[in-house]
Image 1 (cartoon, rainbow, N blue to C red):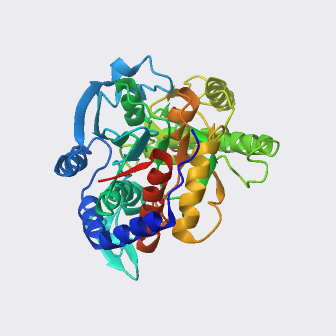
Image 2: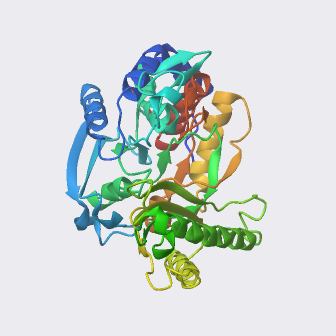
Length: 430
């Protein structure tokens, strides 16, 4: 089946319909962004999306699955038991005729915002200034998620319904493990293409890294600082291990210079010690230190082999340490164990996206992007053979202070998604 050819007047009507509904879309996005949907606290955001889908006539599937029941799915991670269950909300519109099916997926979880005092305004009090909406999650990725919903609304406003079946999926755990996307696939949701509107600046993610999360658990020997020689600091011992992991990071990046997709990318793999806790008293040598770590991996890397290398590096560094040689640290794998992904074999949906992008922006494209981060697209492309496009609006300072999304790009993105649905699924006038 070739890509649907949509008449110019139909495209113009769809673009006009997006514009007509955009003020309401911004209000909806503001209300959605005001929800503090951090990990384990996504229920209110899922409720919000379920209500929105019900109100718009979607058939809604709202379910929770025990994480252990997903263990046979490709890409599964157990998160060291930190995620006992996964809730998802999927809306379905059955097609109005013969047409390709489509999954529109977005995550509702956001990362921690840090101290509110370090934001210009509170992170969950979204506001618009100079054409940008500010707020935690506004860019990553609530704006793109809302764009996908309002793209379908624009088609209806223009007098059309898709011929192909649509699944609009709201998932959790994208920022930590991908268990939300995995749960929808375990539920049986499939389509001819998946579209994930992460903030890409209206570019198409061609390649993305994978990631490994782990927790270093270092134990010391407490002592009064007056007799420091009789004890051992778990915090300084942890610093010794982090130095060894930084050396590993440098070696892996040197190897990346030969990778077909990342050879032109400076420092594509990052070791990050993102969270450190330890010690109990300023005048006592700390007895414990836990370090939350993240390390990137390249597409094609064997994640199990990379984990084994991390274990070896930590063990080798511990063996060189005067205290850790007899009290080795523990490693706990507690989040992402994710493969890298390259978009391949997606010529037909890419062609539809190119048509939609040019019609909305006037520019040939979209431009390919090579990411040093990751998305849920890997579950579709790597494990189920479903072409998975990642394309969305322009955002800045995601995961940082004063996160913001450019509303002009949100409108363009909404137009592109609506036109992509028209080209990919086909349309029927109502």
